[in-house]
Amino acid sequence: MRCTRLYLRSDQLDGPKSAGSVLYAKQRSRYDANCMTEFANCPAWRILLVDDEPTQRLIMARLLKRAGYEVDTASNGKEALAKIEAGDFQLMITDWEMPEMDGIALCNALRASQTKGYIYTILLTARDAVEHVVTGLQAGADDYLTKPVIEPELIARLSTGKRIVTLERSLRHANEENRRLSITDPLTGVYNRRYLMEQLPREIDRAARYGRSLSVIMCDVDHFKKINDTYGHLVGDEVLKWFVAQLQANIRTCDWIARYGGEEFVIVLPETNVENAAKAAEHLREHVSKTIFESGELRLEVTASFGVSGRNGNVPLNATLDALIAKCDAGIYASKAAGRNRVTVEALD
Ligand SMILES: [Mg+2]
Image 1 (cartoon, rainbow, N blue to C red):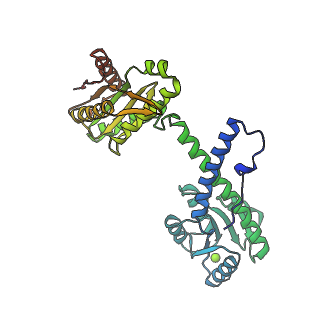
Image 2 (cartoon, rainbow, N blue to C red):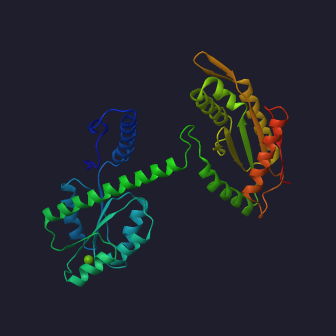
Image 3 (cartoon, rainbow, N blue to C red):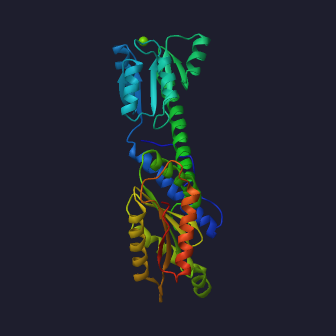
């Protein structure tokens, strides 16, 4: 299929190749690749053709297929909604007058529902009075055509639809990418503090509501300031990335990590009581302390201090994020005070 390009390729970007512009070009090119992957996964533009007259459906379907579209048909609004639910359509042409559910009701229902992507809709009808056009557009149709259809006009209007759908998709991609960036720590790739503060209260609420357990491990790289001062911040950054990689390789897939700040990370363990979280923390501590950080010629023994909190029992309804974090903090403080490279458990019950 052909896709309308809405932006420049990285090799078309002008301007000096400063570090910033190279980075921009790389990001843009990755962004392009993502968009193109979605378009590539969509083999042809798919139209849902809705009309209760079999002959009309046949003629229109033939015309659309000739124009390169993949066509599926429905004989009324209800059938169309079922097909939209199950399939992946980018365009829809619908008749107005149909039994069971007419074109206006179909447009209303489509716009009220949460479809995967925007479906550009053309209302095709014999009604040509201005009030009909207005009613159709107000119901959520994007365009309005009167029968009998003039082939080149229909094809041209469908091209407009393709432009709109392509634009909507690239905006959706950009929004998803912005959302991802807004919740990610750029250095380590784990969630950032914003996400932690947004998502952990939800995890607590869910556990409380369904009577489940939940624990949190907080960990802090020991003597991190000394690493930065001795080897420089670039090595410090490498150490943090390495540290996160050690954590990630040793937690379950349902657990998640956020950077709390500086060299401090939080691991959220759903469905886990504090006793098991303590075992997990001890496993992480031991793994980190036994694994050597290597960067070029440099070999470093890195350790971390851990604070674990949660409950032996299930999360009660009055549980708060603040209490959990405060206990983890106290745990880390105790671990540091006792000589670092250790786990301190501060249960809430
Ligand atoms: Mg009809």
